[in-house]
Image (cartoon, rainbow, N blue to C red; front, top):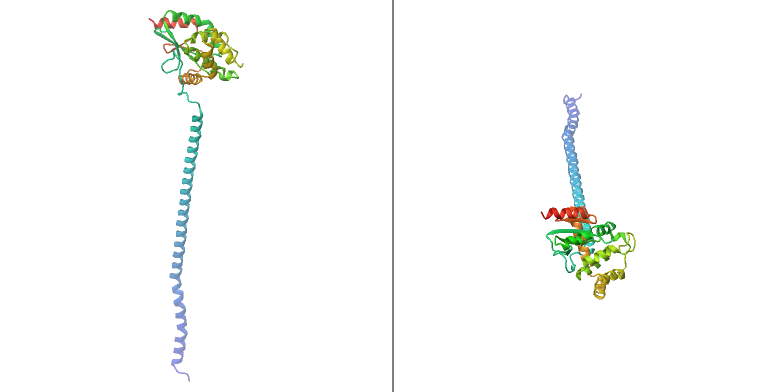
Length: 273
């Protein structure tokens, strides 16, 4: 006969494996939770790293963009300065005798009313103004009513193939230096070349000077050497800064008037009241 404890032992031994198997199954829940937390932490860490890397890339792009912008500005500034520096300086000039204190004009007469005349020796309208109004200007000076301030600008160098505006203006400076600006300017307009032509040669400019009583040697050397070309550049730049954009321009005591004899006489009369 079998022992009465046999079944108990068998039954007990049969249940133990069940309990042993249930133990590990119960432990799997916390392990999965831990694994999930670790995975989430890894994802979070990876996201933080990616964001940091993205911020770093943006920061570097910003720095490089700023550096490039600064470099472009520096280069542009250097180019601008080199262009400016390459331009002839209009502050380095010697004005002829009988010029205003600032060197912007040649003075003729000593009257109380000031007339400023901006003219270009190749400008056809300036030539017409001289022919129609020159006698009136000379009379006003002789009557000691006005002081004329002539500004021989070189706006129309492009209107000749030899920069005639500059050459003739510089020659007028040579004439002014010997006290004959007015006589020489009148003679230049009487021989005025056409726009688009080569203009008068230096020999012709000198010949005109001797015809009004200038010394051929001194005046000729002054013209050939271009002694007053820097002065011409100064006069032209000063006129441009004063917003004189056409020739002839006539001002009576600083106010613009029509460039004709009647308008000039009326303006001078009004200014002397």
